[in-house]
Every structure is written in C-alpha cells, then in structure tokens.
Image 1: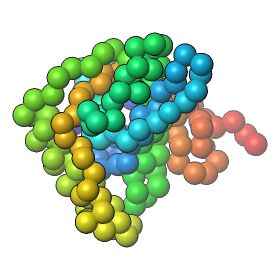
Image 2: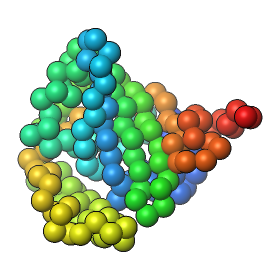
Image 3: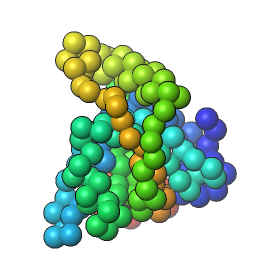
Image 4: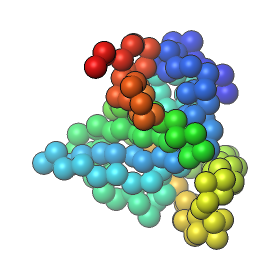
Length: 168
C-alpha cells in the first residue's frame, strides 16, 4: 500500500507510514459518557480511499464496551507501536460505523497476526503466549481520521505529524 497524497496521513514520513501498515501493537481507545477512558487490543489497519479514513479490526469478544462508547459519542483514538523500533503514532478521529468481516478480512488478519507474532518474537515474546490471543471472529471499525500525533519517545513525542515539535 502506498502512502496517501492527501488527508492526515500525507505528512507522514515513509517509515512512520510503514508503522501503520506493518506489524504493530494497537490499542483502540474510547471514552464513555462520563469521560472515563478505556482501551482494548485491536489488530490490523487498512487505509481507505484518499487516506482520510481507516479500518481497524477488533475481536468480537472485546467489542461490547468500545461499541457502547462509540455509539454514545463517536470519539476514538488508535495507538500504534512497533515493538522492535518503539516507533509510535496515535490516530484520532470519529467513528463512522462498523461492518461485517468476511473471508478476505480473515486472511488479511491471519497474515497480519503471523507477522506480528514474528515481530514480538524479536523482543522476547514467546509464540506460545501470543498465539493464545483470540483475534477471530473480528469486526471492522471504520474511522474518519482527524489528527495524527508522533508518540515515539523523545523530543517530538506528542507533536502533530507534519508540524515541528514545540521547543522546550
């Protein structure tokens, strides 16, 4: 997949874009009506259309609370971290809805999960532990991307992508 020419992802460097579509740990964060946050593991990211939308996959078994929160206020954030490099991004946006998953999604996620299992093995996570996670069946959550922030530890952490970090 090539980097979009427009939208919030257009300003990403090639290595940060690769972080989004490569084997990374993902946490989907939502909040409830009382502004209480929660997060859940998510798997696999597809950039849709012109790069203003994305689809992330959530195991059905973990979907009750995030869906309740999304139906309440539609706010979502996705944190993405590559275990071997500690490069990290946070995508913020608005929930556009969910869709059913099919065989093409299952195959995409199986490949993603295998690549992530290998990636985690390089940082000491045994295959036997990671393979216990139940990632299927999954649902696809669609997101309109509004903001992208660098979260890699260092002087640029928290800075919006495409804009210089504030001097400290």
